[in-house]
Amino acid sequence: MEKIIVEICTGTACFVMGSGKLLSIEESLPANIRDYVEVQPVLCCGLCRDWTNSKPPVVSVAGKMIAGADEEKIIKAVMAALEGGNLC
Ligand code: FES
Image 1 (cartoon, rainbow, N blue to C red):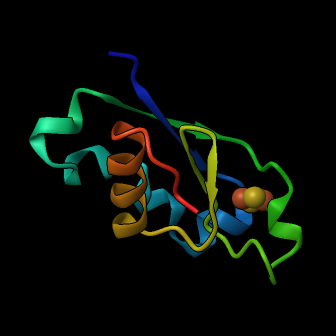
Image 2 (image 1 turned 135 degrees about the vertical axis):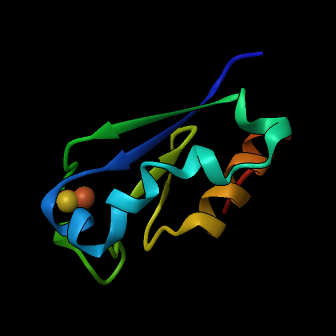
Image 3 (image 1 turned 60 degrees about the vertical axis):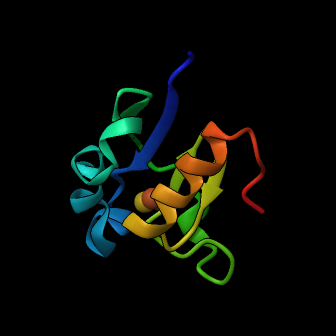
């Protein structure tokens, strides 16, 4: 099975808003899905310039962007990606 890529922005705005803590999200994932997830830090993609629609921290799960990301949203997105569903 192909891994679900979780990209966590480590740009300044996202880092200040908590993305640093999200880099260890793998530890919070249920054991049965942990092996199917790969977490990657990424540089700012510019979404933070529009806080109205893209509140930091910004995370991408299997290519789907999550603004105002937290552990709960990421885990939900990973589960949806594993099931082949859409997040939005
Ligand atoms: S710092 Fe994260 S999108 Fe810009």
